[in-house]
Length: 372
Image (cartoon, rainbow, N blue to C red; front, side, top):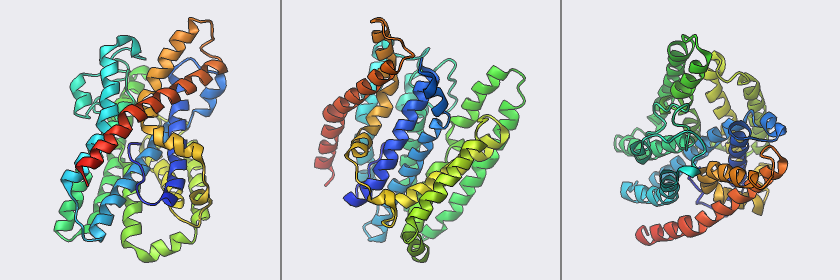
């Protein structure tokens, strides 16, 4: 969610559509599950949690493609340049929102925050108990992405140094299988063995949903797409001819994933749901970068705008919903009304736009003045 496509404007189109879809899914999911809401939002938000998985696939592809292209053109990977770019992309708006949460307790949508050090070190997702640290809990996915940004270039540099880039797929397979086994272990030992259902649900989030070691599937799928396009020309040539077929296949897999994950805390969903959903989104993301697909060629200023604001929207949407419902409810607007939902959407968009203009864009310009 923190990565923007930086190649051609054509390639921006398809991926921006998906980024916009992802942030809308996340917004509706949180609105329909964590706040007073119109009844229909609860029903359509059932699969909204997978918006984060779509963000993971997008980030895995975009970051890895960016790095592999440098290696393919014999430019080498500048770790200094990469980390400076990530720093100024992620931290300025993130720290602003974090500061607001800690300075103004009335901004908090839930009970309390995790310790500050966990947010600053991007380890908040490890051992997160949402029953006690529910405020700004959505930072968990930013933690996973930041951890990915730290280690991914280091791994590629090492593989490149030892001339084993293509062997990286063995590492992907290893991590994929390890994720399955770890989730299987955590479900049996940390979740299923508990007799208290409420504690079991909290532990499910703590040990399966939030930890990095259980949520690498989307990133691995994105990394695989980038590697496939960079090093497997024959496979790439076939893919380029079947963009719309990939879209259809991806949607079909996601529909199957929806039914697979109806009971999200079940053994099957916990172990196989994440990779299944990630595969479906991987097919759709692949279709979005293929010129023969419809999604690649559709132009929309609306999805482009939402995509550009997606990071800020992700950061501030819970604060905005909470404050909007608190203020407007005191002015006699029902929290469960459609009007309250519309006002929350508008306020989130306005605040995200402001943060984009006064924080994100200046930070990007300053970054560009440092890294040329």
